[in-house]
Length: 201
Image (cartoon, rainbow, N blue to C red; front, side):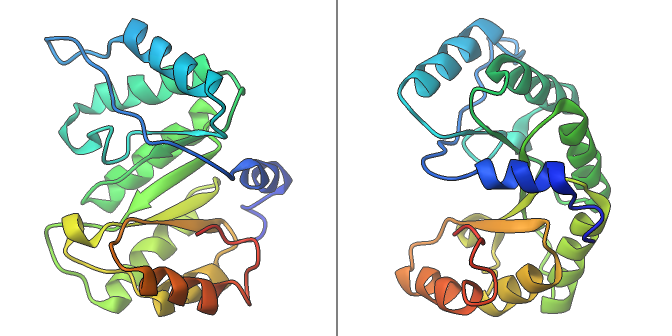
C-alpha cells in the first residue's frame, strides 16, 4: 500500500485543503458537454479564490451521464484547470469494476484525487463496505476521499469504519461528510485525527 501511495501522490494529497466547491456538469440540449460554459465556470470559481474543484460529484450528476461524457468531462476539467488548483474527480458507481475503471481513467487524466461514494441501491454489511473501499485503495494509485451521503445511499459510514480505513490505507486521505449531524463529524475528528492528523474531514 505504501508503495502505491508514492511521493508524487503524497504531494498531490498535501495540496488538497481549503474551499473546494462541487461543480455542475454543464451540457447542451443534446446532453453533450458544453466546454465553453464549463470553461467560464472554471475560470469564475478559480478567479474567486477557491483552493480546488470537484467535478463529477453529486452536483455534477455523475449517475446520469453517459460513460463517454463522464470521461470527456474528467479530461476537460483537468486539462482546462491546468494545475491552477487541485482537481478532485468523482468516480462513484454501484459496480466496483466501473469505480476502478473511472479511477484508473482519473489517474491517466492527471487528477489530484478521487472522491468515492459507497455503493448505493443494495445494502452492504459493514464488512462488505470495508472490502469495497479496500479494493479501491489497493487498485488505485491516487489519493482517495470517502464520500458519505446517507440521504442518497441509504448507509451511514460510521466513524469506526472511517478510522479503520484511515489507519490501514494511507492513500485514503479524507472524507466528504454530507450529513446533517454535527455529532458524526465530531466523532470522526475525535476518532481519526489522533491516528491520522493529516486526514481531511
